[in-house]
Length: 381
Ligand code: FAD
Ligand code: UDP
Image 1: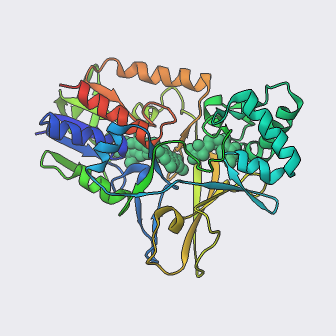
Image 2: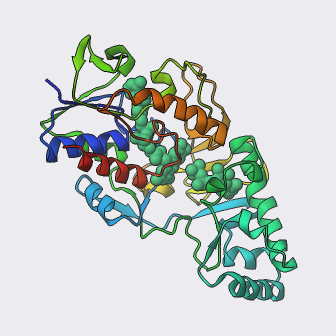
Image 3: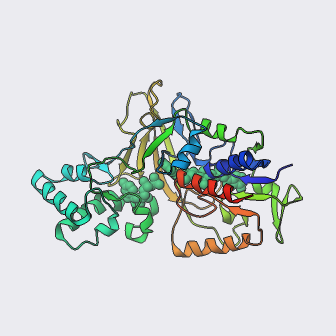
């Protein structure tokens, strides 16, 4: 009946399913254990009619024309330059730290001198990871680096990861570099948008195809098993391609121990005011137990709702307990080694493909995930 099974209906699963169904004529079954499609991009109106992102704020940003064109077949976009501020004392300062921020935190003469120094050292428009900036031996540059390290990175990173910036992968802090320009936008990509009517309708369109069937509320471990190099689907041998986008350790009963992840507790609150913070995202970089507050109206451009809904994000270490969700892989050598042990188990199954932020134990954005899924679909016959 099916010649391809995709586990997970997030961006990885939905992209690969659509392309295989449409371009390769495959009969695709998508198995999703949640009660909805969209993975962590899922959004829905809350009880007050405000469109919220159930698993944290998601902005689609990309410079990949192919990815943008592919997703544009399924949605129109609400385009905007996403900006974030950090609450430091009484000030709201632009993040990433940039030349506007520099002029907010230093007096005019000093800011001008430091600006000149930064441009001379790194070049106008450059993007310098904080950990690299801290290595500069010039006293002025170091002063800026220490300001940014202390006021933007240290406490936020301690909350998010339970570790200091120097203890985590530089890839992670490098996502938010110091920017030597007056650009306040959080991302540098050409396209920065959310789907005009929400992510979930975009996913509905992606999965709406005669060759795709979606089973919700179905854990793949209830219908799939792996024995001696053979895959069984509902008790019968399955010889088609299987694309798996879930956590790899769970598939093998965590037999080598759990892969570590960071999780988040999202605390939503509806307020009977027009606006809570006037910004889509405020990062709390020197205070509070939560990392950031998102006010959805400013993220989605929604104008027709009364009141406002916000969400606070409280990070914690994932334990695997019922109801917890593994959000962030922890990019450390020992975890990657453990991941490799699990991956080796899949090598006995030639048509089994690991794809996705969980399945690959990587820190992918939506566009990178979509690109990888497109490439995988292209590579399969
Ligand atoms: P997921 O979206 O996690 O989908 C995997 C799916 O597989 C899930 O629906 C899950 O239920 C299902 N599944 C797992 N195991 C099983 C099983 N055993 N049986 C059946 N189904 C199963 N990226 C951006 O580009 N921009 C952003 O602004 C952004 N913000 C983010 C904010 C937060 C708080 C987080 C955590 C991530 C953010 N990301 C953002 C990253 C983005 O969420 C991911 O790149 C993307 O969701 C990864 O898609 P995926 O398909 O790999 O995984
Ligand atoms: N970060 C920080 N302060 C900030 C923003 C980011 O310390 O104000 C660090 C933190 O370690 C975070 C990482 O940079 O985990 C990457 O930030 P990003 O906004 O990309 O994280 P995401 O949105 O993926 O959670």
